[in-house]
Amino acid sequence: MQELRRALVAALADATGLDPEAIDGAVTPPRNPDHGDLAFPCFALARARGQNPAQAAAALARTFVLPPGFARAEAAGPYLNLRFDRTAFVARVVSRVLAEGNRYGASGTGGLTIVVDFSSPNIAKPFHVGHLRSTLIGWSLVRILRFLGHTVIGINHLGDWGTQFGYVHAGCRRWGRPPDDDPDPIETLVDRYVRATRLKDEDPAVEAEARDFFRRLEAGDAEATAFWEYARAVSLEEFRTIYDRIGIRFDAFTGEAFFNDKMAAVLAEVEAKGIGEISDGAFGVALGEELGFALLRKADGATLYLTRDLTAVDYRYSTYRFDRVLYVVGAPQALHFRQLGALCARLGKPYADAIVHVPFGHVHGMRTRSGGAVALKDFLEEAVERALTAFREEVVKRPAGLDERAVAEQIALSAILFNDLARGRIKDVTFDWDEALSFRGDTGPYLQYAHARINGIALKAGAELPVAVDGHRLAEDEAYQLATQMSRFPEAVARAAETYEPSVVAGYLLELARTFSRSNEVLRVKDAPPEVKDHRFALFVACRQVLASGLRLLGIEPIDRM
RNA sequence: GCGCCCAUAGCUCAGGCGGAUAGAGCAUCGGAUUUCUAAUCCGAAUGUCGCAGGUUCGAGUCCUGCUGGGCGCGCCA
Image (cartoon, rainbow, N blue to C red; front, side, top):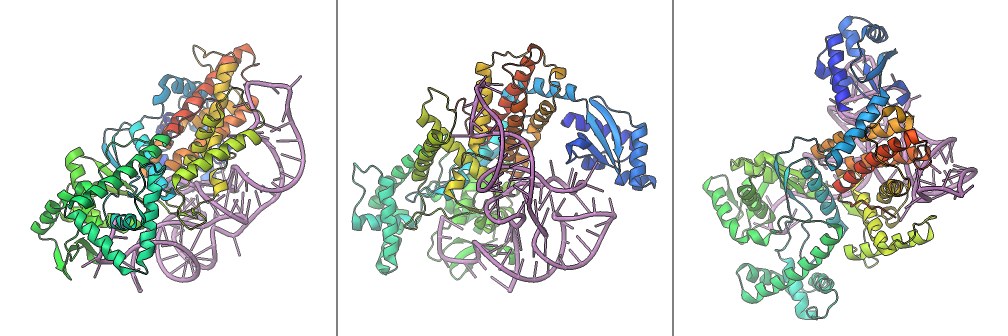
């Protein structure tokens, strides 16, 4: 597709004398496919030639020499509509996908070192759907950027430091630690945290106690440190279970605590460069009217979130020499990251412009009856149960011999992951059980179904891949539509990477699966005439490849039977 | 008060750098299965693209103002 487009732009530049870049911006696939495969609006040409657009289009159509791969050019009003040599196009796309296999679509520039900071849940707090967004978007970006050949370092910047440990500790003192045989110790810790913070409203002593605990922790007090290590270990084990279940891996778990002993040096650097000032006893940097005063050290000497991120980004640069660092963090923290970038610029850091905040909207409505956030673990369990019920009660034809629970697990994950990744990052989402766990329509399971269907064809249709794909045996419009959609995969991936938007890939895949499902009604393989059978099979196998690649970019493992 | 984000069908959302008649899914109604998986497919119906101006041959898309909603603004993270 992109090759054909380039050839057309060159030919049009030749024929019109217009700037190739301007032509490239104008050439577009017509919304109505009856008009052709690509169209060139002739308004600019008309202006250059002093004609009206329809005349210019007609004149261009008469003299235009078709570049290779094109079959026809005709004027329609102010547009020059072009049609591909479709059989050649289909053959080319299918052979290319089959030849490149799981590397198809990876035709990117690559070569950069990119740090992605994502997920970053708080220790001793529940892992809920808010963390899920950062986790899934971040993980998908890791997959996409790696696919394009970049070196990607995924970092989980754990919230493993802060006054919240004081509350957990205060709660445990009053109501006890989780017993050794506690089936869900993190839930118990969360309960202690919630009860302690609730209690502080009536009893100010609790707050003082929590602050004192944190002060002792920062001072290296043995008892406080031991409790912190215990709570951190319990939480990490829980997080790892969840990450393993979804299939997520990090390259580093360097959380906030990791940077504790590194902040003094950074603060000293800020002071040495003379860009900071003391204000009301606190130390920070004035960044102007818009960005405000960036606090780096509280009046009591304690550091802040910004101090830690400033320290962390410097550490990451010296460790990885990144070309770019992405922070997959909620939109409300936009100011924080602008301050971080501005601070780095003021410090003359070479990576100041490499800092990219990848924001996302908040999730509303994800609440339990008691008002707390739903723990991800419970959410997943509910999802699997629903998938199992749907499979047994709603699915009409079920393959025999399936491990239903295993399939339900994969379907549930597909539904949850896709539901989150399919919408634009920045939009706030209102959580809805039925919508998030729908298995019909524009959903993860719909994509999985298309993939599994093709797999079924491979197993049962008795076809083999042809030695060479012949486009004349794939002459149906459905074959052309499917090939066209497959040909757009590389640009969808590239655009997703440029905009840090996994939803571009998600939307692409829905269109691909829809196109397949339509084709599948018409292009039967099993009882097809022998001369077309293997070629149709090749078309679908290529489609399966693109579906599988795309699903993996979203962090979803394609399934073969469902 | 200042700043950032959002507003498209009854609901949830897509709409590359401005291009021809604004698209999907859900829900509703009707149809397709002795067939490689019906978690599918086909058809019908559905719009003041928040409002008002502006730029342009052409605006859902760009600019300005306004309305509504969300969020942020030095001692939380």
